[in-house]
Structures are given as C-alpha cells and as structure tokens.
Image 1: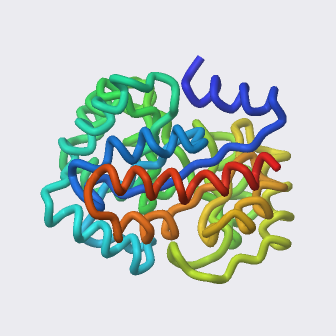
Image 2: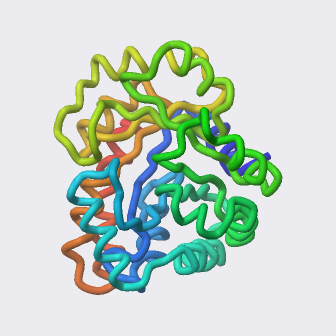
Length: 266
C-alpha cells in the first residue's frame, strides 16, 4: 500500500479531509525547506506539495513566480529538491510528498532516471502542469515502473469525456483546479466548484482535492465540504517570503496552517 493509500484511508476512516500545503523548494532559503516541511506536518498537513522552481512557471501567479525566481537564484535545482526530500524522510516516513512543477526538468534528466531518483529520495508523486494526459504515455511507463504516481489535473473547462479519462487513470489523487487562471487569483466560486467536485468524486478511483484560490481558514473549510482535501499555496508562500531565518520560516508555517487544520476539522 502506498503512502497515498495509507494516508487517505486513514482520513476516510476518521471522517476527515486532507490538508495539502504547497511550498517552493528553496524559498525563503535553502536552509528553510526541510524545517518548513516538518513544521507543516506538525501543524496538520497530510501531504506536502513541494514546488520545483522553474524559469517559466506559466500556470503560476506572481507570488509563486517570484518564489521560483528566488529559489533558482539560490541554486535550488532538481538535485537540491531530491536532497530535501531525502532529509525530510530521515524523520518522516509517512507523509506523502508530491513534486509540483513543469516538464522541462524531467526531460533534461530523462523520465526513467528522474523517476528512479525521485523514488529513491522518497518522493511519492509528481504533478506536471504542462503535461497533458493525452501526451503522457512516454512518461507514464517509466514512472509506473519506478512506482512514482503521476498526479493529474482537472479544471472547470475539462470536458465530460476528458474528465472520465482523468478519473480512470488518476494516481495518488486528482487535483481539481477550482477556477480557470493562474495560482493566487481571488476568484473562488465555492458553489460552482462544489458541484464539479461532486461529479469528479463520483467517477474517480482516487481522492479528489481542490486547489487554487484557497487562502485562509474560511475558504479551506468551504472547499473541503465537497472535496477529499484542499491545497493551499500562494497564501502560504507569501507568508514564508517574509521570514528571516529557517526557524522563523518554520514558525510562520505552523502559525499559518494550524487555523486551516482546525477549520477543516471543525
């Protein structure tokens, strides 16, 4: 049983929803990433999405774009990301870790090498924003061979036919983008998103989580009603950007996430 299956089975048995924070590896500093990951788990994170910095993050808004720029300037490449996960696993063998980013770093390494090194480091899945499922076959096979889940995206503009395909092939969890646009925008419509989430959950063989537009306890609680979990990214990244040292970053991460955990469980 994978970490995803263990985690979501436990949550379902407890009648709880997953809380999944996103942070950019290497921001606010190279030293802060692993302490922040641990702090997020201590504050109630069930899974962590670790952003792999990329020079042209087309699906991301300005907050995450700037965090990627800062991380790249510090040298936060793929080797660094794998090392962060490896060090995180020294204390945490249970929390699923998903690398979220873009296809280019995978192509540079080669899909088979990337997958084997990711799994060896302790990565559970990858979410590649610019890899449509129709073009994923060349990556799916080596990922499957290594045991690396390919997490897929659905959105408000996803057709019924494509949604059925996503539901049938999704691994780890299915990520529902709650509005058409980039990360960090303020346009969340929980009513429309809730209806679509219900449809996806009815057909998906894996849990369905919602992201984009979730920025505080109230929006997290509202979106968790119809989802198996919620993802919070830009708001957390913005808070961490103001941190001083690694200890301060970890403290800020706990303070930000704990109210969301309480609201979802409440």
